[in-house]
Every structure is written in C-alpha cells, then in structure tokens.
Amino acid sequence: MDSVNFSQRTFFEPATSDLAQAIGRRMARNQLLYDLTTSNPGSCGLTPNTEKTLSPLQTPAAMYYNPNPRGILSAREAVAALYNNAVSPERIFLAASTSEAYSMLFRLLCDPRDQVLIPQPGYPLFDMLAALDNVTLQHYPLFYDHGWHIDLASLVAAITLRTRAILLVHPNNPTGHYTTQQERAALSRIAITHNLALIVDEVFLEYPIESEAGNSFTQPGEDQPLIFTLSGLSKICALPQMKLAWTTITGPAEAVAEATHRLDLIADTFLSVATPQQLALPTWLADRREVQSSIIARVKANLAELDRQIANTAISRLPVQAGWAAVLRVPATLDDTDLALQLVREAGVAVHPGSFYGFPPKGWLVISLLIDPQHFAAGINLLGSGIQQVNPT
Image (cartoon, rainbow, N blue to C red; front, side):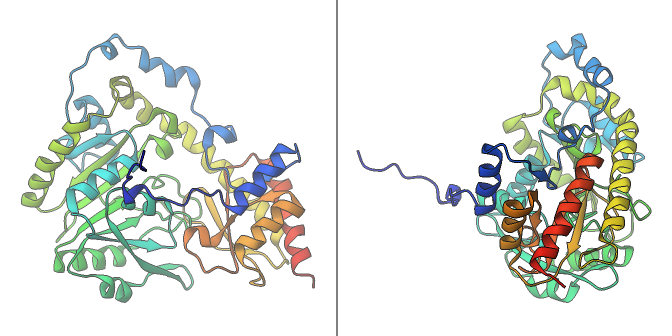
C-alpha cells in the first residue's frame, strides 16, 4: 500500500527537544529536579474551593440540551458583568478554550495564507494555532527601555495587502507588561487606517503584581476598530480543566453585526462548549477573587524571594507588571538552550530558555512564579549556583 497523504498543515517536527529529553532522563532516574517552569495552578496547590467549584455542576438543568451558538444566555450575562456590562451578552461567544476562540477568529478573518501580526517576545502556541488554520504569522517587535514598548514603526512596516489582524496580549506573556493607553490609541489608528481587526488576549488581566490593573479593551472608546477580546476560566478562575473561554466583540456597529453573523455560523457548526460548565459559569466568576488573591500572594512572595537571592549576583530580573512569569537576565556567554540543558544536567533545575518565547538566543531565561515557595526558593538557589559555575567571577 502506498503511503497515505497527510496535510502539510499537520507536518511538525516529531522529535522531542534535547531539553525535554534531559528532563525526562533525570526524572526516569528518580533524580531530584526543581522545575521552575510549571504554570498549572492545580499542580502548584492553587485551586478554588472544591465544594464551591463542583456544586454548581450538579444542577438538574445540566441534563437538558438547548444549544445556542453563542452560548447559554446566563453564562454570557455573567461574562458581560465581568466587564461592567460594557459589552452586550449578544456580542459574546463562548468557546471550549482560548485556543479554540483563536481558531474561530482566524477562520472568520483569514483566507489561506493571509497574515496576522503577533508580538515578539510572546507565547509560542500561536505558531501552532496559525499553522493548523493555514494562517501566516508575522512578528512585530517589543523592545525594553525602562519598560516594554511596541515598536510601532516596525509593526506598520510589516503590514501587507494580506494582513488581516493585529494580535496583542494584554498583559503580555511572559513579559508581564500592560499595553499603554498611548499604544492602544496608536494601534486603533493603525487598524482603522489599514482595515484590520484587533485580537486582544486578556487572560492575565486580573493579575496585577507590580502595577495597577490595566483596563480591558472591552471598555468603550472613540474611533475604535473591530476588536475581539479573549479570556477564559484557565487563568481568570484557575480552572483550566473546566474548558470554557469567551470572545467579546466591540467596535463599529456594522462590522460587529457582520462579525457576529459569521461567527454564529462557525460556532453553530461545532457547538463545543458543554452545558454544565456554562450553567456553572456565573457562580465560578462570582467566586474568582478568592483563588486570584491566593495566586497574587504566591507570585509576590516568590518575587520577593527571587529578589533576595539574586541581589548582588550576575542575575537580574525585569519588572513584572502582571501575570505569573518572571523574565531573567543572565550573562550572555552560552546559548540559552545549552544553558538550560546544563542547568538540568548539573544543577537539577529546569527553566525555560528565553528563545522559547522569541527573546535573543543568549542572555534570557523565563521562570514561573506559581511554584510552591519552598520548592521555588530551593530552585532559585540551585539556579544561582548553576549560573555561577558557568560564569565564575
């Protein structure tokens, strides 16, 4: 039998990375490993109250199926309340995840090989999502100068006749910075001038750390383009296992009407969100502050411990306005992937190379701030020792 032909969009390198193999070998040998990359709240002991979380799933109404492509109205009303009713429930679409929401928007806005602009540094999942929908990504740079900024000139230069949207993450992951009001105004002008949509990921919006909380892009403003704002339970309620996210649509009335009409067709084709989660959503959102407070306290405590340990060392960190990650600057003497490998093999600590997120290949590491404090402190100590061995003074 001849080989079956598979889609080019699913052709990804199957090989496990050297770093993942090194971590796997160490764990297979039962050697101690301090993993500073874990970003699952549940794995870090940060979960909402079990009884409060599971109780609303047991309503008898969960046994009835009355599909709506946008989602059950009570769930969409709860999302609208989250944004102080700045957006109507009729302009809200539920999805099983923000990844699915991205895929829906790519299908809504792009034909094959159309282009979406995304920030760099940024989260690498976008590459996979775009490839699966035959969408081309073009990076626009973020630069650090007493804070993170969008290189607006480079962004404009990257726009082509096939560009359909500008994607931004507010606050960004892993840099943890909010988009400024000046940047928001500039992005709106650029989008309007070039007939582009804005796709805004706000999953970390409610986790301010060293800054006041940023304003949502759902808030009304003058001269707005078509804006799709995404969030979901994974971060906002620390419930990734419940698989529920949403997209809000704001902007010019005519564009919003056309977008909702077309998204109705896409969403109705899949109807992917389970009824019990939708019915439970109002309760989960109402109770979210408790687990958020625990996460913010954990992140701040780990940041304080990080600062204590790296004082007067070759390691420094960038400010963390929001989110769960810290970006570290280290001596740029080794390729960051080689450095991360050496840290696993010789120091017993796992970190992410900065290049994983689009940083230059030397001088940057990224760590999670969700880790259990004792585990985190021990891991940072080993990280410092490992960096010192690579760069003896």
